[in-house]
Amino acid sequence: MGSDGKLPTSAMVAKGPKGWAQRFLNVGFVAGFLLVLLTYAVVSQQSQRFGAVVTSPDDVAAISKQAIKAPGETGSAQEDGGEEKAKTTTPAEPSADHHQHQDTSGDSNQDDQQQPEQEWRPKAVVTEEPPKQDDTAAKPFDNGKVVLTTAGPYSDTCDVFGDVRTNGTAHTVTLVPATSFTERREWTIKPYIRRTMSGIPEVTVTQLDSTSASSPAPVCTVRHHVPAIVFALGGLTGNYWHDFSDALVPLFVASRRYGGEVQLLVSNIQPWWLGKYEAIVRRLSKYDAVDLDKDDQIRCFPRVTVGLRMHKEFDIVPEFSPDGQQLTMTDFTAFLRETYSLPRAAPINLKQTPEKKPRLMLLHRGHYRKIVNVPEIVKAAEDAGFEVAISDPRFGVQVDELAKSVNSFDVLMGVHGAGLTNAVFLPKGAVVIQVVPYGKMEPLAKLDFGDPIVDMELRYLEYSITAQESTLLEMLGPDHPVIKDPESVHRSGWDKVAEYYMGKQDVKLDLERFAPTLELALDHLRQQ
Ligand SMILES: *[C@@H]1O[C@H](CO)[C@@H](O)[C@H](O)[C@H]1NC(C)=O
Image (cartoon, rainbow, N blue to C red; front, side):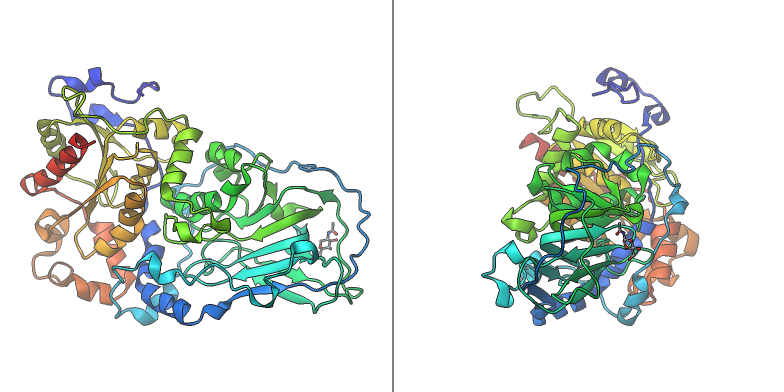
């Protein structure tokens, strides 16, 4: 730790009064309140959606194949990885305002009146997967099989087994049956984990029939012996939290079982993204990612999964892992620790080394939802026995540097925002303190960070500020509905919530009120 020279070493921080500014860490990410917009919509829709899932399980279909004589397969097949497509590492990253915020809240207008579902549990969606095995359950894959999964609040995916051929430029995935006859069928899948996301090209999955004379099976030009995963980038990626929630976590879940022996076919490819997270993506797939939209080959695979699934925002529900793997968020964070060679798997042991100070990273947002009394918080935390460093969120930092920095801390503290995503790099058993802005934001805070952090087996502490700790009180006065009646603001829709609670609010912690939270963090570390 501290190897990059930007991190405060114990020597730097240990003694003497000093301006907090000098201890800024230049760690960064895109921090944006946009990230929450989408999940806000999801929170407020969940009970409805899940209700539908539970009562209509038949939108999960397993489709069998019958047969047909396989059309000529004589193509000039190359071996695995024949085509090396763009996987550049050019960090041409978008700026924060580049994120197109393709808002799905539009379809939540009808439930303005609905309170966010606070206590939804994985249990409620257990019926999502596994797919119903219909008539086809007993059939081996020799003839091929398409398994479509459309249940759940977020994602549609299609698993195609057998002789599967992709045409990237056409966005088609074709199952060519080996022997018997069946009807031709077709599905379209948007391979981004949020089915409502706009700007993502759809992929058409076709199972051919015996009369495919009208549309003959494409001839393989590249033959792969490993499965493929088709998925889309773009969307909300570019926001650090969405990078994990919408892509890295679902990709981990989909690909971990292959131990690197899987070909990624990426639609809407973002070279900067693949560059930024190269260390992670490389460990999930040994092969260079193929730019699907430009891929003019016919690639043949034994299995293709079209689309990724998200179980919960920034989280994994073990029961829903493919192939019964029971993956967890701690598998994901352990994987990240390996990937970035993070030295600490556990936080400080205050029992064994009581003379040592636990380290607290205070995320300091530069724009909205910032903490206005940082120096006082630093002093309070130091008085409580912490060594404190301030992290100034900036975009463009190297992830490995950030990961190593965060891993050297025992407590991560910040106001609700993308910076808390860095919890994934903490040692297991460390503490995260989420400061929840004023305005009934707890359900969102829990969904975006609270639940995932608990599933990472970190100690999660939530500190909800009062109106007195919000700059909104001074700005608007005690009689403004934003102060007096947050529920009415929520009922009016996301716009005002975003404008006031997410956008115009800064935070001034009442340190007396906050002190017990610091004590809880210390208590927890003493028990490690
Ligand atoms: C892929 O599909 C497109 C559109 O149908 C077609 O024009 C093209 O020839 C196909 N590519 C190959 C390599 O067959």
